[in-house]
Image (cartoon, rainbow, N blue to C red; front, side, top):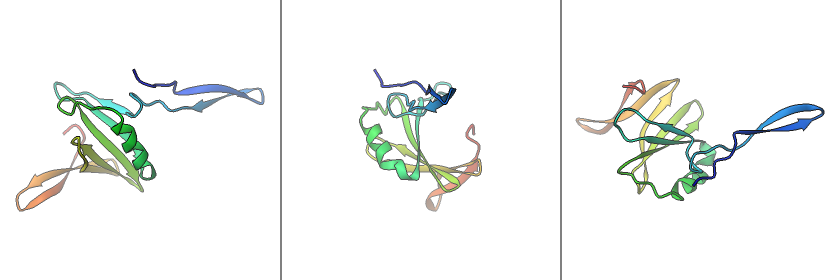
Length: 122
C-alpha cells in the first residue's frame, strides 16, 4: 500500500477553473521507475540540492530489497544533476548529467574512479 495521490486538483478562482499540482510519488518517495530487459528495476528519487535530507528520510522509511532493485537519488544543483546510488548503507556518487550528457564513474587503472561520458542507453 502506498500513499499515491492525484497529480493535480481543480479549483475555481474568479469563475475560472485552475489546476493545482499535488505530490505524486510512487511508494511515497519514488519519482521515476526505469525497467530495461532483464536488469533490476531502477527507482529514482529526484530533488533540488536543498531537499536532500528530506528525501533521504523518505527513502529510509521503506525496506528496499537491494538484491532485486537499484535506488538512485538525482540531485539538481545549478546546471547539473549529481547521481548517487544507494547500496543499502550509504549513497555513493555514480555519475552526473551536465548539459544533457551523462558522465558515469568507472574504475580505471591507476586511479580509483574516472569520469566517462556517454548516453544513458550505453
